[in-house]
Image (cartoon, rainbow, N blue to C red; front, side, top):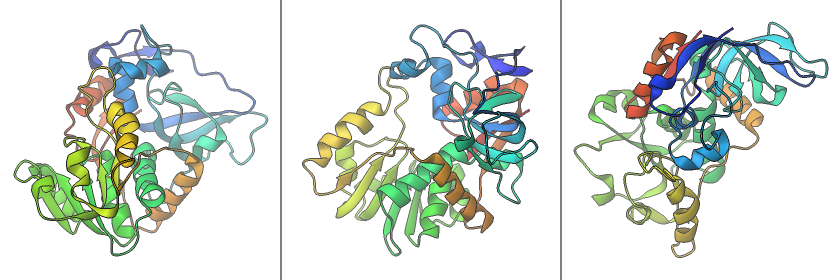
Length: 326
């Protein structure tokens, strides 16, 4: 089968298309014929080896496994003898382990990582959902516990996570402010945002408005700056960015500084943890099939152009999700 492989860390140019062996089918596993896969932060970290903390998962000196990719949509091709609930021919989507290799014609998965593809979605749209949709859902539903009438501000509102977050917050009855660049203002409005802020022209952290929830997917501001614009009983969720920090990336802010700050301020400062993914995927499926949210696919690339997709993603200006087709 064809797959995108790498044997060293570096720029996306280290990626190449090769014929590789199909993954091995285990008794409790599933093989999926991949139709589409989307790009996520762990993928670019696995390619570049930056931030260095990511190498604990991918390999210290070089990648342990050659194929990246975790979000996919496709058709079940084989099932292990101990698998129940999935059959050959089922259309599915889900998030596999980052080292399982979704950037390939066939990927290995476990039944708990997959759910039926939402009715009415293309494979490309379905592949755009898992990691970004789950992150937005967990942040707003489970961490912030957003209630109708609350005010929610979302940074990176035109990106992969942000486009889901705007729609999910609106579906939960919140008044939503989306922060994005000039070129994405119309997109964020079209997703239902009540207010949009062009960060190239205005700094929301210096304005008079206060919010019940801030979901920050960019980390351009310090946590101290952010809590000043969160209501005293509100929630701040730092969630990404600062990939230019070679050692820790945004993890230093999310894992260390956030919990410490939460000890001395009245606001809750919390991070997102993606657990019980199958339940989350099923909840997203309900939202998708009801029309309350929709994936935003900014651009698609054939498998051979995966290096270009990764380079575009690394620039940080993608509209919605970038999707690779097989």
